[in-house]
Length: 382
Image (cartoon, rainbow, N blue to C red):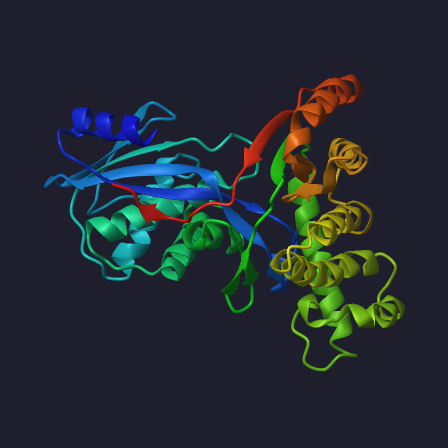
């Protein structure tokens, strides 16, 4: 992709581009905790988005998307991002930089990526971070990774209409090879945790299903968490979100919250604890314990938070019963998407065969498989 984009940029725009790259991400553990200012544990992966960019001395910007095979031109002095169009991510980021007072002129930009579609690897965050990295380099803006992350998040909120958390752009901007990021979603600070898997690998299994109730369920879960916090504030001085409640308090919390709310609160409280335990396990090379935490996370997401589905539960249970797998859980918002599996590398082919036989028989769908590696974050690559 890098070579293809470089050569096509030269041919299309008759200039030599600066090349930026930003990766997608996985989240090892810590699901639905971000909007309670909790803890998450993402890592950058080897797939991502490339952006070629160069000044053009024109009164307008010329864009080209390799994935959509589409051109788009806009006047950089006066433009309005088009919601639902890929160019929105470019104009959304540029609009914020202009508002912050950074100087611009016309530029040419070409975009291409290799993130598997529909796998929950956060291609939109990678796109925004790659655009920000490219613009910062072209105009020598010296934007920090946290600034790029926040601009990318705001771009999603204001222009794409997606109310995402900080985790996705943050992981793309700050990722390090063989390091996961123990990220505090309140302070927006992280600790790098080494990921050395030895004879094991990380494998995503895509259910290739997305149930329509995902958006409404997300809003309901978020509202349930906020309601729980308001109740608990009467009994716990100083708590701002569920992340402030310790696992040791769960028995008391169960007595204070209605039965409709407690399981949701329990997931957030226990999941934050699991994130820290997972970081400790990886730091000490205890993959068995890390795998058990993945299994516990899936159980909590499925039974307490109720954001799984029959397809994800099937894939997680089959994986957890497989001798070569230490742990498996659903990854992402839920109601479809992928499971993440910690699997002995030598057993991958046997596991693929097992799932390729059983999953279509059960659901009439073909799964897809993605081997991921913990990789470097956003950077200039040429």
